[in-house]
Image (cartoon, rainbow, N blue to C red; front, side, top):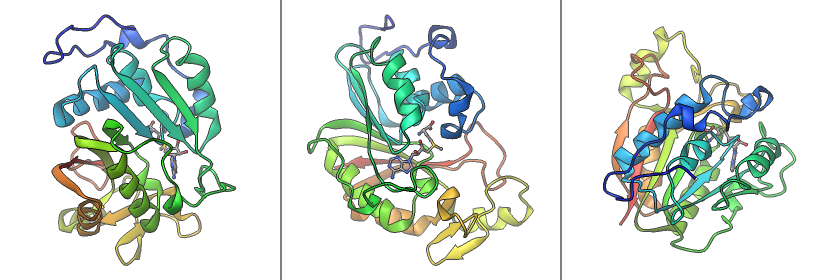
Length: 261
Ligand SMILES: C[S@@+](CC[C@H](N)C(=O)[O-])C[C@H]1O[C@@H](n2cnc3c(N)ncnc32)[C@H](O)[C@@H]1O
């Protein structure tokens, strides 16, 4: 484990160089979209510290942990008092994490959840709306979903929000990325040359590709706000990303931070 500050109030972020021996092979890129694996992980970690007050001794759940993009950054941040749990539907990134991270960082655990996702796990045994996260109530200080609800349909998102609220400790935070549709995003999208365009609307949600809806899913911001509040979480910040044609300021998806009261 990285040598970190001993004072939780002044945690030190890891450097790229410290993490350079923990990068998965390029064939796992479907789970992180290619690009700068370490750079994106470190940028996300920085936001978790700034927006959620993440300290090295806390317990983190990474839903849809992929090929370990956040986990790798956290191996340089969490200390022996902290711990990390990741679960995902897609086995290959998990296998890499289990083989390459857990032996070096035993407080990092990865589990397979055989949950249906038509893009990542089309033969999954359990519908996401019915999936009970395999952790006790009030177990985590922070729950992260980075680029996961952007691949999930409304009733599944609602079910996951209930689980997120259940496994969070009082005062704990959820950090969730979305494609949020509001007046500003709708005004920008027609001129956007980026991806996704989310041109197919179904009430409160939008998809890129009706033949494969979980390829990319966006939500009316009002729907997301209501669903988060209905789960018992209070939104503390929404930071817009560049996906709909806003200037790029380091983040593509919209970031929502919510707190369990
Ligand atoms: C675009 S990847 C992002 C991975 C990771 N969070 C990251 O930022 O690198 C989306 C991930 O969500 C996972 N996923 C999709 N549906 C899921 C579900 N219902 N429960 C858990 N993971 C899911 C996929 O298997 C995939 O690894």
